[in-house]
Length: 419
Ligand SMILES: Cc1cc2nc3c(=O)[nH]c(=O)nc-3n(C[C@H](O)[C@H](O)[C@H](O)COP(=O)(O)OP(=O)(O)OC[C@H]3O[C@@H](n4cnc5c(N)ncnc54)[C@H](O)[C@@H]3O)c2cc1C
Image 1 (cartoon, rainbow, N blue to C red):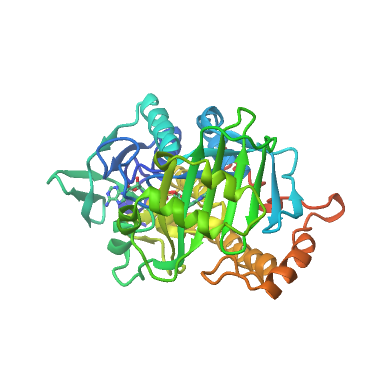
Image 2 (cartoon, protein in one colour):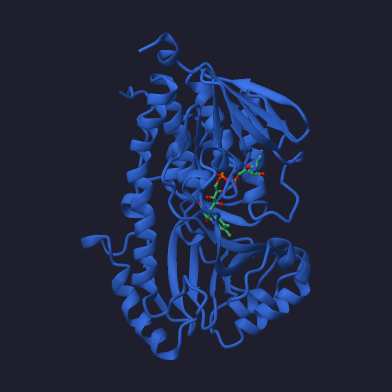
């Protein structure tokens, strides 16, 4: 083996300043590798319309464990609202199941996406990591001993390796494999809203998911009488984020009110109590087939760029954080080529398992309902689902229904050497 191929990584270009990017940069920093983050948008909070720019999300215990490995879990704890359990309800308002997470793990947190981006970027900056905004990667050249990146403002940057943390529509992914398929529309539009004040009682930390008659509705009512809700609205015709924005919040609230008119859940009240300026039109859901390779030469992928999971999994951001931390461990202990191989072997089985589980759960819990697809459930399907769902969710054994189970418990042994 030549010195060239055995040399350890000293510097890295991290493309994308969403979730995976700053987490990777902090992990690399901890591993003694100099990293710089390059983010396409030039302001924090990414102006809409962008799929990844708005809305809320839950950060699962395993995502927080990944952050703990690099001493950054406080970023999520500081901005997140605890979600202590998951409640499932039918459109009639019936409580179908209540799932609690394993007790020894960090509590799932609901965060606003823009706040999470800002918190992670601020923490990376606080640690002395350069975070450059307004830097959209156009192209990159692998010289064999390093990578030169070219940005839309004409600037260049060089480092030993380049890490694509640039999301579902990754540019780095096409540089690694130009034949890679594009993400495709999954038949749903998503919305998230913040309700300033509702008369409904607090859900005491529980996040409820309602299998509405025409669409899926999730909500949590806080102790201060505010609420958050999110909708997956089946929409057969593909619509871009910009097109969905153009419809306008007033019109969407009208359509959503119609969608939930028959439901005997808090959905009609919460939609009615939402001010148009508090509706976030998060846009179309998209899926991505698994990639044949995540790495080529001195370039590799993390987060959605490598392994996008459906939003219904509630795992995308957490898996992105896990991959970012594991990649840094590999680059700390091995030269780039071997490190990328080790990283893929470490990560693929878990990512594939979660992807399979998400599909299986969607099938089990909504075999009849088909909640994960554009077609809403018919009356027979709904009845079947409501009868089967309490059983389908009882995966925890003697303790009853457990939320997350094996997915949620994934500590990363940072100090362990990668061979
Ligand atoms: C509606 C919806 C709900 C979701 N809910 C959840 C949830 O509850 N829990 C969960 O864990 N996950 C959820 N997800 C998934 C989660 O959002 C993603 O898995 C996560 O954002 C992936 O992080 P990332 O850093 O890989 O990508 P992103 O967050 O998309 O960040 C990519 C970054 O790269 C930048 N970028 C793109 N191209 C370039 C370029 N050429 N040059 C420089 N920068 C570039 C972008 O501006 C962006 O900042 C949801 C997704 C959606 C769509």
